[in-house]
Every structure is written in C-alpha cells, then in structure tokens.
Length: 292
Length: 299
Image (cartoon, rainbow over all chains, first blue to last red; front, side, top):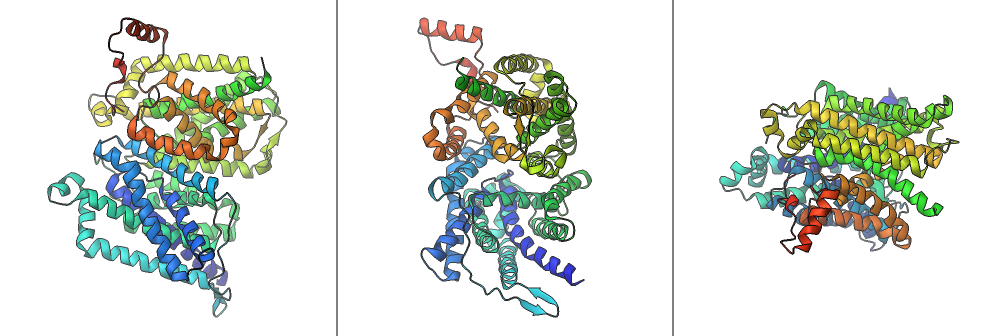
C-alpha cells in the first residue's frame, strides 16, 4: 500500500507538469484549431533560461523562475508573430500552420544544439534532498513544490479564463472566431494573449522539468506526452487537458513501478489508440463535429 | 561509377522512395504524418527478417515489407481518419515513437543494440528501377479518377464530400499506399546498410522526409524527386556546416510557408511536354510566368 501511495504521489507531481504543458497546447488549439508543435521548443527554452539564470547569473530562485517564464512568454509571442500571423492574415489552410510549427520546432531545438551544444546539464540543488516523512511515506520536497506551483498556476489560469473579461473574450473566440470579432473582440490581441499565457506556463513547466530531471536540447520531445494527454482529455478542452495529464502520468508511474519503465511510453501510446477507438472526443471534449 | 557518388545516389533513391509516399499523403491528399519513419522501420525489419531468417529473395521481401507497413497504417487510419482535427497527426507522431520503442525491446531483432548481418542486396540499379516504377505508378494514380478525388479532398474536404466523394476511403487508400512506399524504402535501406537499429527510425527521420516534401513542393512529384536528390546530397557537400544545417532547414520551412508555400515546384510537374512548353515560351519571349502555379494558397 505504501508503495502504491508513493507511486501515486510521484505520478501526481509529474502529471501536474504535463498539465502545465497540455494546457498551453490546448489553449492554442482551442483558438487556432491546429497543433502547435513549437510548444516543445518553448518548454526547452524555458528549461535553459532557468538553468543559465541560476548558474551563470546566480539569480535567486524565484527571480529565475518568474524571469524564465516571462522570457518564454515573449518567445511564444515572437513565434506567433513570425511563423503564424502571416499565414493567418492570408487565411492559409491549416496544413500550413502545422508545417510552419514543425519548422519552428526544428529551428528552436537545433539553434540550441548549434550554439550551446547537445550536452546534458543538471540544475543546481535548490531544495534539500531530505524528504518529508508522513508515517512510512516519503515525499520529496521538489515533488511537493512542483505540485504546489503547478496547482497555483492552473488555478490562476482558471480564474483568468472564467472570471475576467479577457477570459470571456478567449472563450468567445474559441467558440466562434468570426462572430466574436464582429461583437468587438480584438481577436489578434486575444491570440497574442493566448500565446503569452501558453508560453508562460511552458516556461514554468520547462524549469520544473529541468529541476526534476536534466536539461538537454531534446527535452521538448516530452510534449508528445502532453499531446496524448490533451487527446485523452479532449482536444481543446482545458479541464480535460488537466485531468488527462494527471491520469496519464499516474498510469505511467504505476506501469514503471509495477511492470517495467521500458513499457511506460508504450502504455501511453496504447492509451492514445484506446481512447481514439472508444471515445475519440476524449473525456471532456466537445463532440468532434465539423467546426469549419 | 565512383562508389562514393554511387552511395549518395542510393541513399537519395531510398529517401526518394519514402518521400514519394509522403508526397502522395501530404502533398496530394493534405494529410500530415509524423510517423513515416515508423512505416520505414516496419518495412525494413519485416523484409530483413524474410531475407535473413527465411532466405527470401529481395523483391518479394520488399513487397512483403511494404504490405506489412500498409496493413499497420490501415489500423491507424481506421481509428483516426474519420475524426476532425489533428487526431491523425498526433496518432502518427505517437505511432512513430511507439514502433521505435517496441523494436528496442524485441530481442529477436537484436533490440536496441541493432541487428547486423543483413545481406547487401540493394544496389544502384535496383534502386533506380524501383523508384522509376514507383514514380510511374504514382503519376498514373494522380492522373486517374482516384487521384483527382484525393486532390479534391485536399482542396475542400466538405465540398468533395457533398459531391459524393468517399472521403474516408480515399484518405485510407492514400495512407496505405504511402505507408507501403515507406515500407519498401525501409527494406531497401536495410539491405543497403546491412544493419538495422531502431534509432535509425526516430522522429528526426520522419521530419527529414517531411522537409524534403515541402522543399520539393507540395503536390508535385518531380519536385519531390528534385528535393530528395538535392537535400540528400547537400549535407555531403556542406559537411563542415552540419551543426547549422537543421537550424537553416527549420528557418527555411517557415520562410517557405510564409512566402512560397507551394515549395520549389508546387503544383507543377517537370515533364518533357512542360519543359518544351517552357522552352517555347522563352524563345518567343512571351510572358514567362507559368500558368500552372495558380494562386498562392490553393492547397
């Protein structure tokens, strides 16, 4: 039982990082209707920003944390302006958006390899290794912090989406871009805000991922998990993305705990196929009727 | 022939085979796949198994490899092709990675350490012959009713459904044919390298294939041929530049999408008659702008 709880806690901690990534991806998907494959690159940049702020510039942790999230928010907006907005103005077909996103992802990953190098880097120790003990359970301080910060960020996001005017505008744009533009919503600004929000969360996810594991240029590949989680929860749905991420991570940690860590990624993919067969709209998704 | 140049040509031919398949899927049917390296892996491992363990000759083994890839693609297509949105794209992305992970654990094929000792059957002549055959089949398919239906789906899915085209069926045919091309390419690669390792079929390989299709031009077979030849040879020429190669590719993909989304030869074919037409036009000094290009965003 103790082992099971231990695995569960581990899963929750990783799942909350997946959720931060999946939410950013889902936000963009709900408005623009295409998979932003550059999201992984933004997460990777977040991990590197945090790493360099902590080691080279020796900034205190909260400053580095928020700083790298702001920088990735700017990066995400820059990608939108450079790679997507010209396509949007031309009303290009969605295939071009995916290709452009893929180009941006290749560019981001390889500019790091070309300039900084492909080596693995480890974050300095920020939280003491000594875990909290509750009975026979040991909870790592880092895990606890990751879970707490992710929860705060997600709650903040829910607040923004549900209770502010900007959030209402985002929801309206996601529901029907043209109609909300006619109602006076400045959709260009909304899209920039959405990319900034997604980028901000991606930066936080990147730093936390780097702290839990290591930093390397291919770290963005982890977003494949958040894509799966987003499909699992329902493409374009924010609560679905969160629930899907946490379920996926818990299932993954339980597999690697009880079966073998080699099967972890396979289980994730089997889950994807299973969801697509049984319930393609995901757990919380709207029915996938034609939106065009 | 110089063996070095021959080697590059064989590699270009193998890439071209996979690119032709992807060109049908992405360029002509408008579906985006991140998993073609996975189909190559299935074809490669299946055909190598047949030649090594069952002593089949090359051609039946290649066909069987292509068939295996097509059957697996049918499963993915059945699940995702009738869904709206990016489900297909994400499923292929996950599939490509999953195939690699499965092969990493199959000790029968040497697992992650790789599988040496595959006979060297691939040479420049059978690569050229297979590619020519593949191009002829593809060109005829595109010009047939089925090919026109696929292009119609690419242009306007809803409209083509309304005029009675079976969208799901044509997407499926396109996907299966595309996967079988990739499978044959994988088989050729296995019998050229004489060594297989799951790492050879990573996501990087899939994106490389997509980049070639985009450079060559979406919806152009001759563009794909040109793209495969140029982009396979280019890294050999620019060896010292290799670190920045993918940086430039990524940037170039974005720039192509923004400025000239049809790529090098998008929607335009280099055939003897079209070259003759172009030549005549230059001679008579009429407008040299080709008529075949159409508007920028016809995809």
